[in-house]
Image (tube, rainbow, N blue to C red):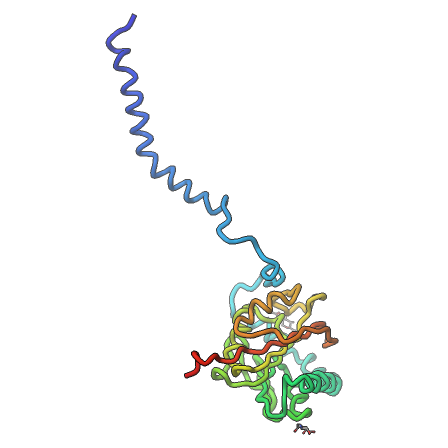
Length: 254
Ligand SMILES: *[C@@H]1O[C@H](CO)[C@@H](O)[C@H](O)[C@H]1NC(C)=O
Ligand SMILES: *[C@@H]1O[C@H](CO)[C@@H](O)[C@H](O)[C@H]1NC(C)=O
């Protein structure tokens, strides 16, 4: 037997249901939007070129990173070895690398050359010995007359200063994109950068990144073309990669 009440009962229930749904909508939308980034990939899948370059964790600040790099550069025992026992052998080996690059027309006596992370300047001495007289190095700690003070993340040089840049300290870069960006900024159009890197073995405890192939380098050198890759025996570094910065097109010329 139906009472008047039972006839009107369904209406309040639906009303309250819809009212509560209406007021909970913003909350549901909020929860949905908070959850979405975890459930849906916001970036494309990691490519080889990205995962082949890993930045080592553990630096609380840029200053902490610089302090650690300084600690190696300033180590008196190491500096002693670099300038005495190591000097002749390293200058000789670097000279043969640079002679070879001259034969490949990537370097000439007239090149204005920079060595990045040159420590005490063995590679600068080698460049001068093979006839590249206008050459200098940078490091966090200067070592006159071959090496001036400079952070490779912020090179102390104007745009388009050099014909040739060499480095075997890519693994020490905390910001590889800045390391390469600064090289491309300070190279003249058509200038050459040669890097010695380790891809099949791990470098030392002062390294800030690990490289597992040359693909990340090709990605980082945005304004250059790769000229060659070859195996070398370079003091623990096994691969030489050479890039040539693109020449300006007619439209870009000022
Ligand atoms: C810096 O190097 C010295 C040895 O030269 C070492 O005793 C010290 O623990 C190092 N400090 C840091 C912060 O790595
Ligand atoms: C470059 O310099 C070296 C060393 O001074 C010299 O032997 C060589 O002949 C020079 N090469 C050219 C092409 O001038």
